[in-house]
Length: 166
Length: 278
Image 1: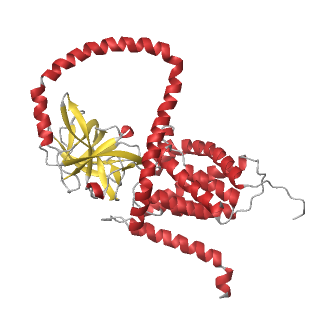
Image 2 (image 1 turned 135 degrees about the vertical axis):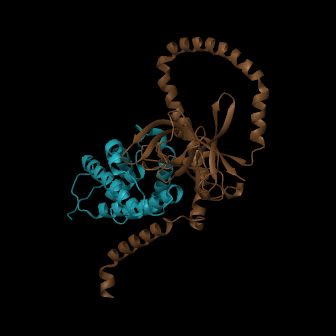
Image 3 (image 1 turned 90 degrees about the vertical axis):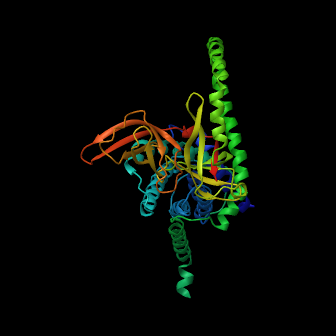
């Protein structure tokens, strides 16, 4: 059952990213829903869901849109793996931690994307991207993670009541 | 064996990363066709994308309607004025329409064009912020091939309609295809200025603009000159309209004349395109 839900989440978010995101872009910058979902799942479900979901959604995205297969898959996989393995202590209702992590992930995503593209012999200007797009994308994505974290944690987290010591 | 068991997770992670990197390097070269897995995924998902895209177009239209409620009355007055003006203009246009002979010639020309135009809808857009690409709903079943050129009809003068260059197809599935637009980083186009017969190269950049240079630094190109593809290099066919020169910069140090080009097509508002095939 959990796998079915996860698969549906992957499919729906990829489709939304490909079709709805261009229509709600702010100043020409699109939000990254897939990254938000990967981060939320890695934070909520921990091992090994973050990395596997990142791999699957990245592959779908690459096959459909990118001329080079595997770049997004690799980045989401790495981000998911790192996040699901970091020890973090924070309350589940605390929203600041996911927001902070999402900001870091957005930076990491764009940096990795630039590096991979650079070594695939694409000449792209990082400075322009940082100057005009990165800040807007950061703000947009951090707003998005609040929504996606709430939804994902309400889907996957059972009421956490325990009467014994760990 | 103990080593394998102890480091099972690390081995899995490292092998996944290595596999992905090898896929990246394998797919980074120009491919003549796409793999079977890509084809199947695309075939299954592209109808879903078509529906979702239509839906989101409707939804974003709906939001606009809601916004407009507050300004309805004012808008009504504006529109009435506009209708009167338009009726006046309409009369003028009707006289133009009566000059159909000239236009009909153009139409005949476009009918006798050597190209076969395949009409297709845009069903999805590249989701990153780095590139400018989209997906269309026609594929090998409709006769679309890799490397085919994608155009739109552009009216350059009143009644003169020609093919405006949109981009090039890089991957084809059974019922879908990926298009790289000319304002993408990947595109380099060799052009011709019709007025002076000067030639040069333009390419897209991250700012979603066309920039380039003229080979001859003493060339007499000015703002407003029309650029057409020259057919050099063989990727783009000759005589397709690219856009107008927006700015000419004399760069004496580099001994080239840089230009900035306004594309003929508004790439934010592409909904239908035509694929050229012989």
